[in-house]
Length: 109
Image (cartoon, rainbow, N blue to C red; front, side, top):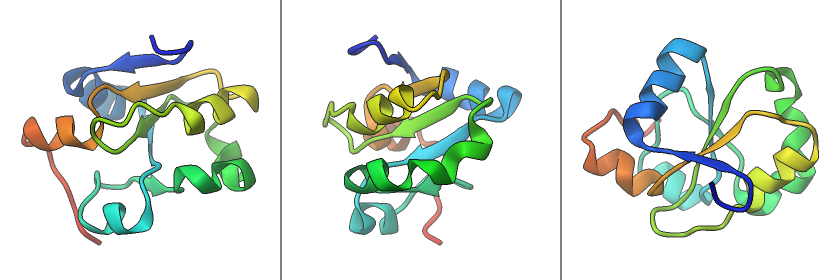
């Protein structure tokens, strides 16, 4: 837990996506997202989350797995979602770097 937001490793993240139909929310900036991201992820840069979180309303009842840049521990986007009534916000421990190290699928489109 980091400031009240649960963190999970890549194995738990894959299970969350596959078995609980979690929404993957990538909050990295546009250039980072363009270099590669998780399949079927939704992209809202962290600095825009306060004005765009309403786009996620239809996912309020699902787990939301938040992907940050590797090594950066900003919880800003997760905290904004929590504050706006999203009960199942979960961060990927180690961010996108952990996902890459685990050899898990990435796409560039």
